[in-house]
Image 1 (spheres, rainbow, N blue to C red):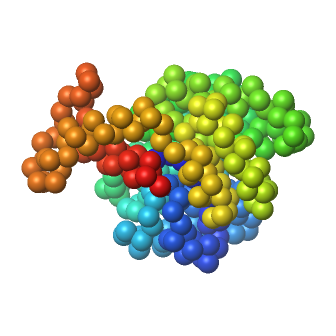
Image 2: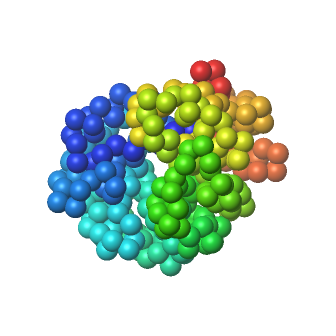
Image 3: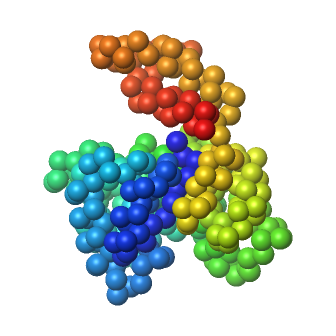
Amino acid sequence: MFRSLIFVPGNSMRFVEKAKTLAADIICFDLEDSVPDNEKDAARRIISETLLARRQEYSGIVYVRTNSPESGLIPDDLKAVLQEGIDGIVVPKVNDVSEMLEIKKHIVMLEKERKTDKIALMPSIETARGVVNAYLIASAEERIKALVFGVFDFLYDMRLDYDEHDPLGYSYVRAKIPVDARAAGVHAIDAIWQKIDDIDGLIRDATMARRLGYSGKSIIHPSQIEPVHKVFRPSKNEVEWAKKVVQALGQAMKKGTGRGAIRLEGKMIDVVHYKQAKAILDAADT
């Protein structure tokens, strides 16, 4: 599920610990915007130690947002956090395919050295160049699961001011990213809603994101999780697909017979699809 991706400052042990209780679909420990330059090393250490001890303590899947490709800090970020316990990496301010392929090289090397599982990637589109190249970025590598939209850095790059009552300055980009993501066969996650006390505004903003084709929303506060989940409840088509998958694989999963992949409506499905289908049905009931 990609309904909610909550950013957790990686330099705060208190927030990292609190994240264990959060029901967001994706917990994303942050090494970028929320961490001052003089605390990057401390944040890497906190996240690394947390991942080592993770086991099943976090209800959602766990990502880490690195610094941007232009910062030159990604190699150090990856060395610190790429280990057992991490599910994926969010890469901010991605401009083009070459940046993602360079990051993939570092990741593959570390995975081989450390004998870890293959992790997922989510590029964040936050610049004019990134917007122009969004489809190519989304389709550059099979590890990529979603594009994330970063509205505030995009507006800064365009020398525009943010106005929640007049989204004209970013309306084209906000509509383009989910189209590019869908064309590449991946999800799209919308930008944050900054006013944490304005839940009505959050709901309106998330509803618009869903109408544009986003699968979920980036969030910055626990109070935003439940309203966002209600907006991004699975669609009728998703629920019907999930029911078919559970019916096709359910008995084998219960008995533990491990049937492997089977064919459903012309496509191969397996245990990963079964888990996804169960999550969709659980979300539909909430």
